[in-house]
Image 1 (cartoon, rainbow, N blue to C red):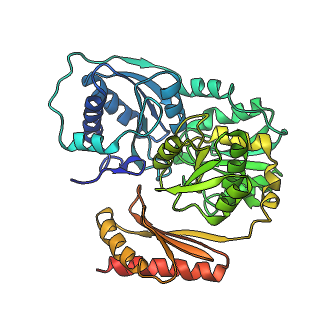
Image 2 (cartoon, helix red, strand yellow):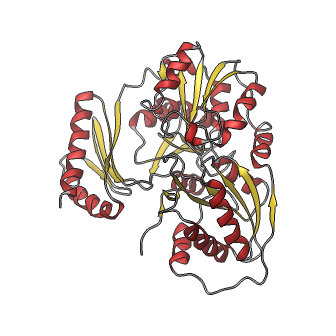
Image 3 (cartoon, rainbow, N blue to C red):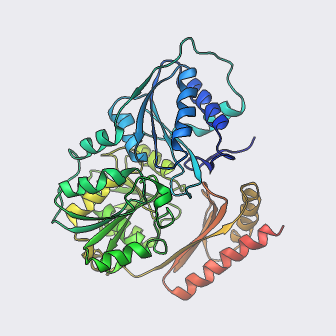
Length: 443
């Protein structure tokens, strides 16, 4: 059986890997998984293939007995949040997240906005259930984005002070509502990439230091105080201050310390990619860090199981139970702006020993990833003096550093990441990890 689902739904190039036939097959499997007569909401991001896939998905769901409410263009957090808040039995988001515009895909959630049992949906796709609905389901429409932001307005805290903010929505779903939402909180908002069409975005959809250079320059030219930057379906957020890109670990540390201070729980759930800088910041805030498998769905489930205060990933995912057990962006952003001056975060955590962090990826066909990982893992587990963690790829921890090699769960890459107290040591480890992967790919 070919594996369709990654760590966060299904993604592929529209028209070849993601077709109308695949979507309708998934719809039938999902309908059988839920049971006839259930009510499902469906949202989509701003990819131009979205309307076609929405039509195919809704046809497949209703033909198999499910009632559908179309939410229109809305973020992934919006779909998951409304699924829970409005009492739907499940939700489906049509998106490929931070993948390029020619991609699209599907994410499924249960009634609580949490990821469903993807393996069962996939099994139902490859082995279609023999059932026929007794009646076709109905279709309704709801302005999902408006409903989502109306409810957020009652939850999100007011800011510590009014700011001049740059907002870069990657031309994703929140482009039409987020700027005005932030203005309603008193901020002056300068928009970049806030047209709801990802093909008009002037940068790659994954928000990283190298992809945000134009936005950073825009912030500086306009003497703005801070920036909020998102990915293609607006479930990742990263921050800018007057100095440029605010480090992912600093942002994680700041939000974690705020949430720990507001929660009965003192535990934070991260992944095997979560670094020691964040771990030390959590400890200083009176908390502890628990690591699990990479992926917001896995982290969110672990947060719920352990009753943790929050979950986080360096890429900009924040899972805060107040909103739900899924990645949210706007709520953690308003928490940060309510409790901290963004331009003081670097200073606030300057007493934590500086570490150097890097993550690189190497092209690797999906069908070769397992063999490459096995070969690299064998070599890594033989490394001396390190502590081995192999719950997701292989991570080796030494006193001054760590190295992680793992297959991407969403794209045809192997990922090599590491952290060290010295740049030279980090360069050595990243080079070592890339060498292991490239050597394994030759076999």
